[in-house]
Image 1 (cartoon, one colour):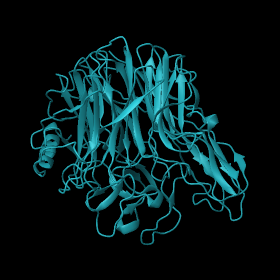
Image 2 (image 1 turned 135 degrees about the vertical axis):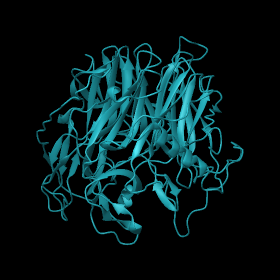
Image 3 (image 1 turned 90 degrees about the vertical axis):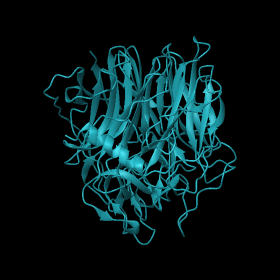
Image 4 (image 1 turned 90 degrees about the horizontal axis):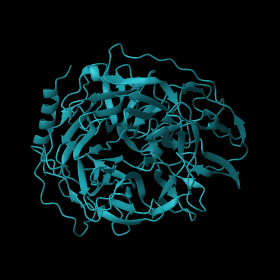
Length: 611
């Protein structure tokens, strides 16, 4: 097993290669950093070592000119399970349970001249979970709420309900599924779902959307009956560049009986600086009925590509339920190998923010936590972009000599945070290589802790190791258990045979160590990646058409970009995108995988009883 010391040495080597950072400023914006010669930077992309890397989240696919339609059904699916032999400090309660209703999945065939491929709308992943007593709600991206219809010889996706939910009112035994209502007058939700619950048991949802005029927006919904029904969407903000929204709920730091709702997101095209991204913030003090919003961080470009640039993503706000402090970690990109985790904190309900200082030895600035993002850099075609991903199957050659794989799931680094009574746990996944996107690299999960509301921090603590059967540990989520000292981290693992599992690492001593006896597999069945990046033609220059088997979602989208775990009294609940179920492709002359059987993404759930 790779030692903790070797993991820390690797981070030290990374830090030693970084220059010092000049004083930061939130003053007037600068123009974007220069691009590589002859290369245009697409919206939602960042330059990494001279290559444009896409960091935008999933969007529905474009319409096509088609005629005709018929329906087909999904094949039956079975699964098996096993549990580890050791006796962990927390135990699973029952088996894994599928929470999304498979009856909502549909296959759409269109008989046209010329023929066109079927729509296989069966993807559910990218999960968020909240619990209050016996009421549990899981929100997720779903393609089963997207209806392709024929309008004037064009296929239009209407309605386009990409934000789904499943609710259990008996502690996770049985589930009912549906789609989050859109904004008034709209028939579109765009995913990136997050669900949280306040102290009174009211569930709150936030996600991307379109308003009645077709403009991009962020919306919020609420449920006052345990997640059974949801209000129509309330407009958080209209923002044509909105991406990767997130939600936090917690007590106001002054009016302690009132719970505030906070939503953050990235704006990718602010009018005053369209090549830059901004961190935007909204607050509701009346249960989500009305919202006020503002920009809280507008990063500037830096002539040194190894330092933070004018692009941020993947916010993850958290409220400490004890004092109402609002913590806002996010990722700020550089133009080189190491990007940076940063965190803002507000102790006055979002009126003002200041940067938390990690004071990591060797970092360019006290507010920066360097991280090399995990995954191999691959070509996901013109529609999917250049992405970091975990992969399976044979390697092929894409554009500009980059590798491409049919079976792939893209990765991000969204720092995950848990807070309770001033104790903070921050976790993330990082590559084992100093070079971003390096083929053959693995990845591990790390954690740092603060015992004084972010004033001081421990050095990075390795949660996982690539010395065993797992080569990747990615997309972690974290929660605090029954005591401040109990921290639980759930993440995906990719095994050496390229199969995928979900694992949970637990520490009962403030994250000081994670022993094998407190690490266990969450999934009771391993699974393989789906064919999400299928070539439709050979790459020629900068043209490389590929498709996901589920045409509604972009190439290389499979597991989603996050999973989730939450603590409720002495129980832990986790939900994740799971690929154990199989589907056979409809036979069609234009289907490049006609008749093949492969995995599909569903949402699964597991409860654990903590000691």
